[in-house]
Length: 271
Ligand code: ADE
Image (cartoon, rainbow, N blue to C red):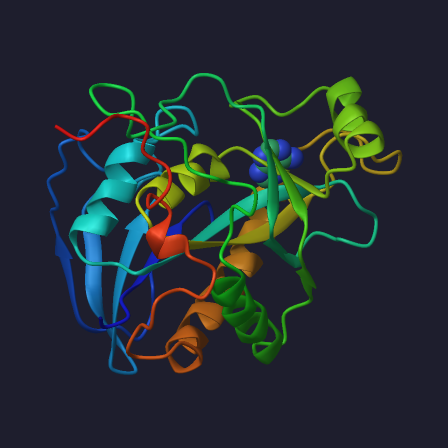
């Protein structure tokens, strides 16, 4: 199977530069309308598909993003490797605004989203013990380092519902008691759905702020977030352009089994 990269771009990443034969196309999904059309093309000879998570013009809130339609659309168009790029707040002094984190764990505190493709007619329980693909995450880490980005290898991402930022008490709970590293509003249920769709998934989280725990930084301010986002966006574009040469053009089975996640997960008896 040929590698096809899927980039889900969050706040700060609304396009991809240097894509050959770039065309916006509509993909229909039985799970509703995806966030937007997808931009298809090739980068260094490798097919790449870009989907703006919030839609062009940023029209979807973290709650209204159609996560199931988005993952289904990428699956239908033949994507093998999904890289999520998103903004986040930091719970760690040493993970500063402007730094990137290759997330490897999640705590899912979202509650108003459809989280599974299963449940009507077919019941499946996939494992998300290791919710990101180590092979794809390693490629993202190398791409970030090569791009000169201050990047952290691994981190636990607290996924919150939003759209409001957290209270200081919540921020301290997530940091001091739950030992999370970063906080964002969009990686869940995206990562769970990618696993159900048997897609490799990696998360590149771009830090914009210190959430509300930090004694010197007070509350999250969207105008500050937007300023940091602009710098992060150009770093993310640089990271993405380095990915095709780091991934094998032909995809062997995922060494971590992401592409076979359903093999031992379906409960419903076959007809
Ligand atoms: N996205 C960017 N900063 C964030 C924060 N502090 N909390 C949740 N999502 C974010």
